[in-house]
Amino acid sequence: MKKNLKLFITLALCLTLCLALISCNGGNGDNGDNGDEPTVETPNSQYSEGLKFQSRSGGTYCVVVGIGACTDTDIVIPSSYNDLPVMAISSEAFEDCTTLTSVTIPDSVTSIHHSAFQGCTNLISVTIGSSVASIGEYAFKGCTSLASITIPDSVTDLDIRAFDDCFSLAQINVDSNNAAYKDIDGNLYSKDETILIGYAKGKTATSFEIPDSVTSIGEVALLDCTNLRSITIPGSVTSIGYWAFSNCSSLTQITVDASNTSYKDIDGNLYSKSGKALVQYAIGKTATSFEIPDGVTSISNTAFRGCTNLTSIIIPEGVSYIGWQAFLNCSNIVDITIPDNVNIIGDSAFYGCSSLTGVKFGKNSKLKRINTSVFEGCTSLTIIIIPDSVTSISGSAFCDCTSLTSVTIPNSVTSIGNYAFKNCTSLTSITIPDSVTSIGYSAFKGCTSLTIYCEATSKPSGWDSKWNYWDCPVVWGYTGEE
Image (cartoon, rainbow, N blue to C red; front, side):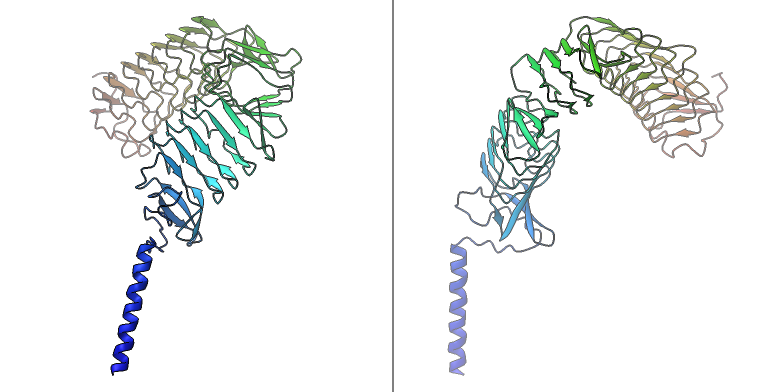
């Protein structure tokens, strides 16, 4: 009995000593699958303490998911946590951490997910580990103090929008051993130099001559390059991606080499070689009016996007297509006439044209559909007469047209989409013809002054159960007499 008692006491003392040693060495005892304790495994080391982690894939590795309790402005991410390798920076992990000035990402990390450092406005230094293979969409968006970045040779998947709104970024460096990308004069290209992927928008240069090796100007390649006044496109270029020159607010001259077989310039604006498509208007021009040349049949997507100087645009009769976002945020255009031949107006074509007071359609219009958000945010628009050719009014088509007082819907229309007239606060009455068999969710939300006159005697079965979620007064069986 005494032997057993002595053995028990000895074991108890050993256990107490072990626990004390573990406590002194800083163990946190967290081995759970979530792995989200806001401390790192090795406190008082060179790594930042207090970061938040989570284990993934059955506890085989972990990812950084947030800044947690860490107060460092210079973050050094550890390569392991709770004996698990740190392999990723999770989506939005450091989003809007405005106190963050530098971050060091270890070699164990293989991916930086979307929006991981978005909105870190004081971030000036980023060290990316040698194993990172992918950098996601908006990973560093809005890091407005970031002046340079170095892409290691391991990166094979760099999202084209990873550095959106990095307005100070003047130098993009790529490791010479990278097999997918390279830099030329601080701009980002494909390894073979045929694709211009991204111009460093923080550069102060006012002109840019695209190298002769380039055959494709990538989507958003020069988006928001507000310092550029002139761009020269070589004869080698055969394709230009969406938003390639959008929001280049100082751009007054686009020049295309005469040998180019796909594009040409006319008066400093960009057209297809045939002259049938107006690809890009140089939105920094100071002219207040512009007449699109005869022969143009298509106004390309985003062609005038963000052009704030124009107050009037004349569209020729030959135009049949107006692309999506074609006039988005052209905030000073006062009125527009849509020619009869236009049969497609793309989504958000006139979104945010806040000075637009009138839109005129011809009597013989071929337009079939008012697409999504086409006139959304046209806060000065007062009257709209939808042509008889239209069969569908899509979602948010007239959302936030707060000055709209009169809408005429023809009996050719069969459907009205979700939020189609949301927040049309000045609209006092609207007549829904009995041809309309479908109305989407909350089509008249926020129409605080509206009475709806319906030719149908009761709600058609195809109308959403919450089509009038705002409970505007409804008159059924309307015949034209109140």
